[in-house]
Length: 408
Image (cartoon, rainbow, N blue to C red; front, side, top):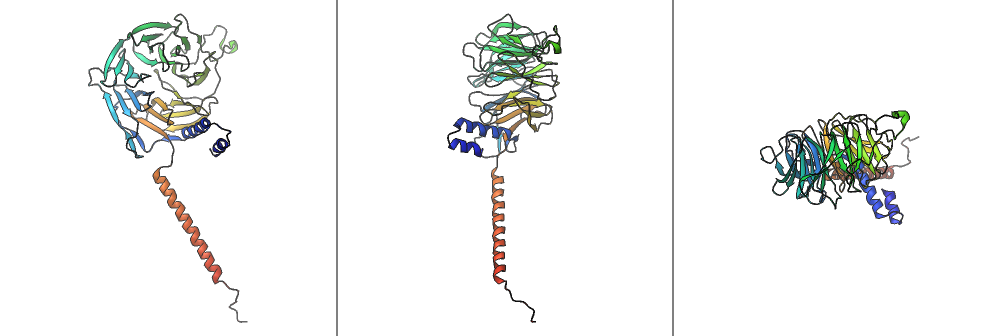
């Protein structure tokens, strides 16, 4: 950090470089927060979390009993010890609540006044945040594992829906009906994610071990199929089916620049892909336990060097270097499996939820006021001790003489 400041003062480093260095140091110092807590409301496992993309202030969560809750993360008290309050909830007592497990919740990208939820009750609901009443309910033929809205779309309002059907359904938010269907998988589709670079590009992962890249303007075929062997016939055979993993693909996340895609499979492997040609970058992240037959949340940091991948590993969260696969840190705090997580890019914070029914805040390690006061106390004690020692030494030297007590 001192070197960065020196380079900045001499004009060798741009202000964004200093900002990146500070953000990276904060992210690498992430730990279980002792001062930040999230008010507990869920009585069943938490399946999904999402931060509103406008203010990055409101955290929405969905649980396996159909409950949806919204918390305010902004500290209005100014005190270091703070509990994020519950603003509102849609519980099982509400006539509008989902009947079964809520698998995904997501804020509308342009406004926190609306959010979308999907459930095992075969419905997709668009909610008005102010009234907590669904303004649109889309009936699906099978239970829904995941849905996603594009955060950069300006020319369409499509919601990609992954369900137990072997296809990706696209729902038009304007009409509330299906726009078209993307066929290519041979098993249940667990996860979908939109590219942050191109509003028409979509990735999907399925129980058939495949991950496909789509251009939604092309309804016939996908752009390409991700192949873990990069087309090497000596390893997979000339007639072998191209697969991204040796197990179901239930986790996908694009990097912030859209140049790479991170996938997670039930073969306990994480893989990194180029999005322009589907090349496997062959980064070894090590084995990470994954036995879930549902969508599992992973996230990638932005504006850091190196970029960090956050992956649930049983009841823990592994922080991995994006391009080298190095394990940077393991976050330990949940009492049961972690199902979902979301990274706060402004404050370098992480929020996670799991089967222990808790939402945990992970914050950068900083010196608290108590630690600072204790440090000052120790410093004063050390200074006082050194002064007393010097005084004693000076007195001893002044009282000493060269006379001997021997009279001879």
